[in-house]
Image (cartoon, rainbow, N blue to C red; front, side):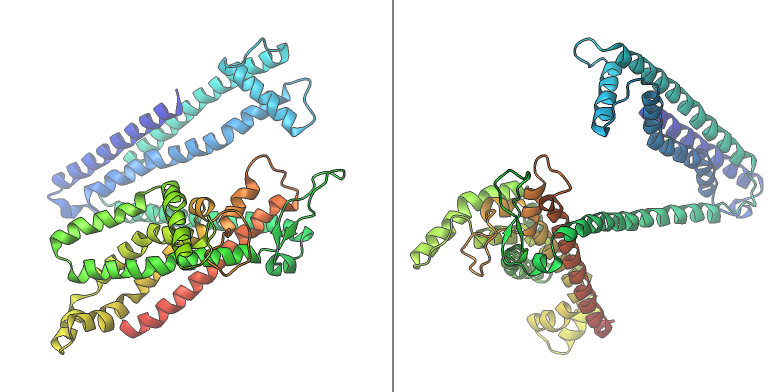
Length: 459
């Protein structure tokens, strides 16, 4: 039985268990003169039975799916006589065995591969059968055990809520552990990079050229890993984008929340949010084919020289892209401000604009800061628009009319193609990723400080 079919059957058993538990509780309530005789509602008894029936079986199925293939591979490879010495060779051999077992291997297989493929098929069939039997036996057995333990005095609600609290805690822990795992993986690779390149050179160097000679007899650059041009390019493009997105997005939110009628709001808000659904590559095309030539021609009209790829073109288009992040969140936060604050300000003689400036916006400022922070993070992490509109040149300049590059663009450039993760060129991508993580962390601390400061005034 395939895993999707087994999962569907398990879901059916859970639904049957829920219905049985619910029916028994309802029958017990009717038989004892009303619902008050039960310690919980019948739905909690049904949920309690369903959890006993499905949760342990589902955990067993998940653990089985994680360890099934590695164990089968180890058993198959242990039976191979001529085992390759390298990891790549063993991976290639196992791929051939899998293709032979699936009937996708072109040509005639060697006797060793054919025997291993037959063993692989037998192990997979046996494991699938054992998996089905164990999951079904566990599900039916624990479901029956829960039904036998049924009594009207069972505090099913407390037990069900305890299980769901554990599930919610597990989900929160998974998110936290994932973040910690990402941080540690980036940190370890960054430490390997800093063993080859000094931290001071990386943080304060003014030249970025990560190309290195791969062999002793190869002519190539020795590599320069000064990341200051990347940091300045990222800050310049992000600053231009925020200069466009924050005023336009905030003013749009204020208009939609405070001035626009219901009909205008029903049309304008969805149209504005369409910008968030446009793929970034489309924005990149727009920036490269429309905005960049316009910027170059406008600069030439006033006697300035602009590059065909410029930070200004990328920043303008990126700012348009992240307008919905600012406007939607700000609109929701402004609408969440209690109407009593507006009524009080208007009752004291304030005009509508004064009420918005001195009451509504300060009260909604924590949420607005959160929306702006999300927009900044989106701008810092954008890659496609910068590649197509700002270029790949790591120029250290403060002129927005020249081409620049950003940290994310260089990370993509360093990791494109077949790379060896032992060279400083490739490990530099992890160091750049660590800098992005730390920058985002600093932005979060600043935002939390601002939120705390103004929330104390308006609680």
